[in-house]
Image 1 (cartoon, rainbow, N blue to C red):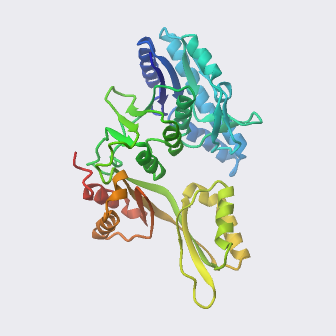
Image 2 (cartoon, one colour):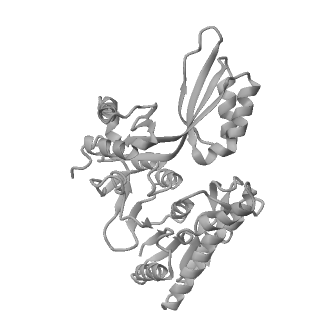
Image 3 (cartoon, rainbow, N blue to C red):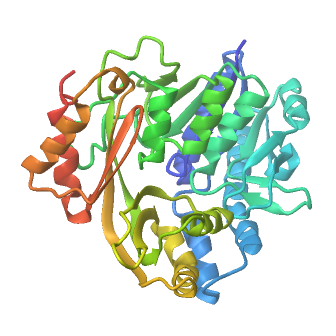
Amino acid sequence: MALIVQKYGGTSVGSLERIQNVAKQALATHRAGHQVVLIVSAMAGETNRLLGLAHAICQKPHMRELDVLAATGEQVSAALVSITIDSLGGQARSLLGHQVRIHTDNAFTKARIFGIDDSKLRETLDEGKIAVVAGFQGVDAQGNITTLGRGGSDTTAVAIAAAIKADVCDIYTDVDGVYTTDPNICPTARKLEAISYEEMLELASLGAKVLQIRSVEVAMKYGVPLHVRTSFNDSPGTRVVSEEGLESVVVRGVAYDKNEAKVQLIRVPDKPGTVARIFSTLAEQQVSVDVIIQTASRSGDATTDVTFTLPKTDLARVKDWLEEHVRSIGGGGVEYDPDVVKVSIVGLAMRSHAGVAAKMFQLLADQGINILAISTSEIRISCLIAAEHTEKAVRALHDGFGLDQA
């Protein structure tokens, strides 16, 4: 008997017919003698609908109230799945974040889990029932409902799998695994049988939509076996595993992120502490930045330009502060470019292979694509380019590194 966590995304529970399929799959696993914990997302489009209602009333709603509103989507899914399982002759119990007791901080709309009380889950499983947990949500120390950010149900699933020491965590989604790149824009993309935690972490952070980055972080930290697969058929998916034996391929995948905006701070004072204060304040506002470039000091006026990227979704929130702060320190202003995309290559074997960066830059140059900025890690190289070249860049890099070959 195995202890299995199954997570179903919004498309998998997007209609009553699909909820029936989820219930049947869970029941089949349970009747095979396994203990089953289901994590469910809101029905496809429901979270956007709910948040749209809030923003139709108020341009900047209070974050706490947004969490109260958004969490209801998963509550509906959990109840409907439980009712369906019961109607098919099984036994299920729906549990919300505060009932499982998923403890989080109070960073509304992007809370982080710091502990899970699994006693209610254990009690449900010991009674022979399927536990159906509303994903995406938790509760802070003051009892407020919190949500974990977009894709947070993945994090819920992996965190619960780690807490209860599950044998496997199956992530069911609308794609049948992890691909070498987005098959919607690159017809030669291939499904991977396996990928390392580290590679998956990089791809998730760089825009791959299959798994939320924090879920991969938790899986890697606690060694949770992940299996990404589709809920629409029984085909094998992609296993996310340790890196052992996976260094034979130089580049494992190509990712792109359109949710990037380039910010340039013009002629800010070139002295110790200036840049530190800017990025410290952005960090305090929970804004992640990337591809940071500081140009050499301008001769004569002791100023410099600082360029970086941040998520477009955060730009509107910090734009006024950036402009005011640059003015207050005597800077020359702020320029923005939202029409950019970050395209990246990822692979464990890049650590020990020379010339990968040169090849990437040449492949882009051959397509007439100018590189605006570059960022690297041990197993990743990212280039910032104009958004209009996204598809051309992804295809050139994918096939240029041989990812179209089995």
